[in-house]
Image (cartoon, rainbow, N blue to C red; front, side, top):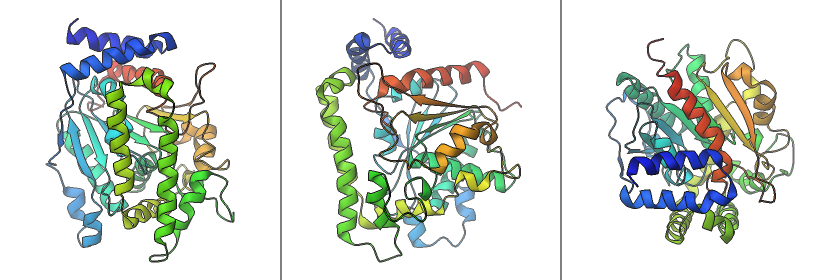
Length: 370
């Protein structure tokens, strides 16, 4: 079977998503990996205008710069991936990447382990989008959890400044848009597991104890390990070697984040405006680009039941994105419920809407001539 046929068969089986085909689907993907192993390299930006405009950015902010990696794809519509608090973007779409590469290059924004600057990362995103548009490749912004919040904050800032970035599309998976999504104001004890773990990291500078950081680190480790313990599901998703490698890299990433880096990532949420705070024609819509917002059927381990993200996008998504669609991603009958941003352990549930979205974008063509 040729490589081209592998690729086409992979997409076809992804769209079907039926449980009996999953082991065959995994075999095709892992075989293609052997024929074409990943070649992810550091991206050297040619445009740094927005970053230079920060001017007197401190050494602290410079340390908060994300590492941008690039993987060459097969089309003219690149995707820029911004992952959650953990893991890195490269692991966030570990099983999705082959599908995304069919549309174009993949750009991964991996946050620094020891610092985080929202201003600087927004500037990096501005420069990267401008660079791609200059080459005739309007990108899709693909934000996951906290990364979706970064995308929304970037779009809000652009809209407030009278700028409308040229984009092929926007994908937001289980968006965490602001601190109130996790830790509602006025509530002594957050209702979610993640909210309780992260609330101590929202204290003033210097007030966070190492013990608080370790507790939050332990929560993220246990959440990932819980998914990795489902051996039956893992066998349908990836080979044993892939499973071991993924687990090793994710664990290393979680353990490698310094207390300062962890605290600054969480505090960035406090800098992000809640979408309900800018529900106004003055600031909306954020973008006319096709937009897909995906919530998992079980968000309650992360998102508070009164989360502004849920209120804004499940009730008024067309106000925020004039060509937007919101869907709840659910598991097949008899299988484990889909959890928050579970692009690894619930790949087959997320694939159908994502494949349809990208197919529609390719059908529309690039928006540069508009």
